[in-house]
Each structure stands twice: as structure tokens, then as C-alpha cells.
Amino acid sequence: MSSSTLSMVSCVLMFLILHHTKESEAVEVCSFTDQLPGKCGNDGSNKCVNAMQKKALLPEVKVRCACFDHPTVILGRKKHICNCRQDC
Image (cartoon, rainbow, N blue to C red; front, side, top):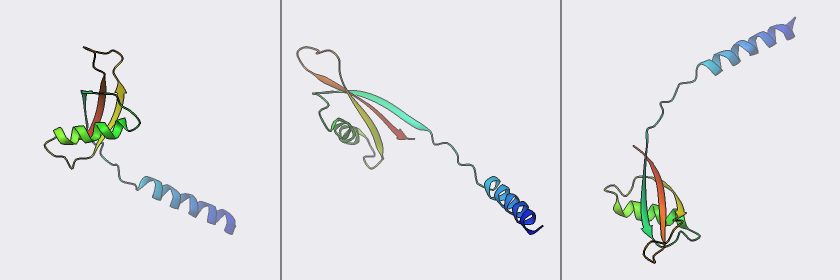
């Protein structure tokens, strides 16, 4: 008898705890792309983050970037593409 009561109480408590969580609002994400001279190298994402923070009006905003080497050479110069995202 006590084990059935204990299991029912634990089920009710788990139900209350799981359904009492607050829903969080989705954060809007802004994305932007830029082409920069040179290749990505080993620290391409950091290179992109630094370049974007220098261009930004608010350099303290957290920016996440991915770096991709441009597949073609334009006018004899290599370029890389920075795809960056930040919370709006």
C-alpha cells in the first residue's frame, strides 16, 4: 500500500515540476557576410570575429563567425568569406 502511494505521489510531483517550467522566448539572430583579403588559416573564425568587431559600432557585442576560403582567386588575390551571427 505504501509503495503505491509513494509512486503516485512521485508521479504527481514529477508532473508538477515538469509542467511548471517557464517558456523562454526565442532570441532573434542577425546574420551577415563579408569578404576579406587573405586566407582563413588556422584561426579563421577568430580573424573574422576581430574584423567584424572592428567594423561594428558596438564592438562589445558577442559575434559568432565561420570562415571559408573563397573558391576562386580574384585579380590574383586570395579572399576569405566570413559568415557571422549575433543576437539582435
